[in-house]
Image (tube, rainbow, N blue to C red; front, side, top):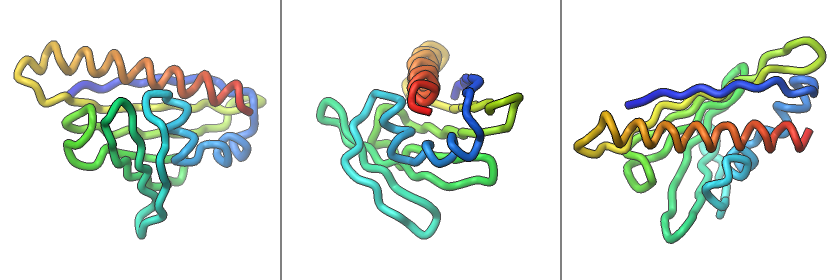
Length: 135
């Protein structure tokens, strides 16, 4: 399993950023999957998303400083994936940080998980760039 972290200053108040960061927009901002539906659950939300014939379910929970979400089961691009998203006040805006742990679960984990982390880091950077454009 590999961990990646991406952080960016967003020149908007935390309250604006937090309202913008819904489970649906987070998946859309990452850009790899198209949201097919969002369902409220007892613990938060489940986002169903798809791309190139692959459908995944991401379970989201709200935290005091942001969101946490994980890929449900192994029916996705990763054997396991969990991401924490936090929003902290900074100067005249806020610092948004995304931390993700990923594993492909393949035999050559040292190489395959490194590639998965590299791809995941790109998704997280894209999400923060799109967020900054939106607010």
